[in-house]
Amino acid sequence: MTLVIFILAVILIGWFVPRAIIDHYRGRYAVVIASVVALMLGVGFIWAGAQIAAMLADYDAQTEFDRGVNAWKIMLLIAPASALHRRKQLSQNGES
Image (cartoon, rainbow, N blue to C red; front, side):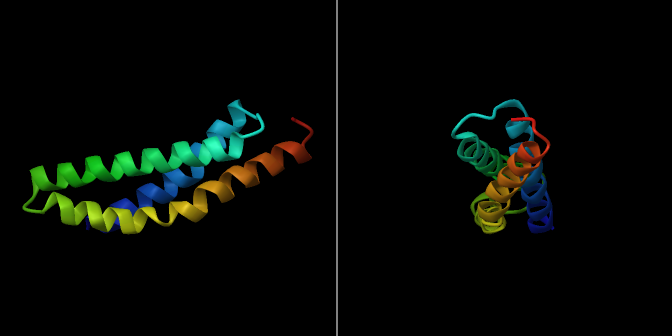
């Protein structure tokens, strides 16, 4: 069950966080910064989720973290794609 939660969470973080950062910062390295921030937030969420799962249920925190990292790998594709897509949308609308 935690794997499903981790997958959904990293997809949402990987899509919305880079878009929000690109809306506020449009510098030269905005896509890289947005992607790195989303990836770090994703790892933080997975670590916290693994700790909570270990406290509330009879799960091993390390095993849950390992499962979460497998879900987190989705963000390696989603976060940069989301940031690039948002930057392209803004440049087409003339909002550089």
